[in-house]
Image 1 (cartoon, rainbow, N blue to C red):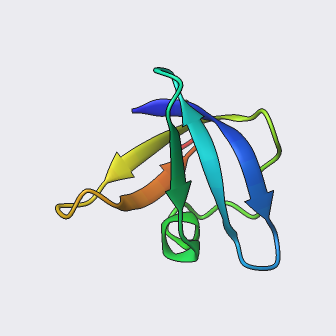
Image 2 (tube, rainbow, N blue to C red; image 1 turned 120 degrees about the horizontal axis):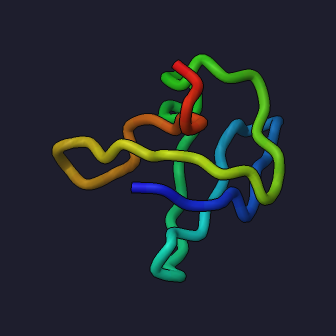
Length: 65
């Protein structure tokens, strides 16, 4: 699933994104840490992977491995 970063706190390394359907979804530091990224910026396009429990397990940038 894809969306756009709406908020990102570099101190807590968590944030929210707006999905393509307009709904808002939060992600925790653990999901960001699994990405291997160092920073996200507002408006940046991301892909998110959901875990078995439905929470965001990983945040990545499309096209970046």
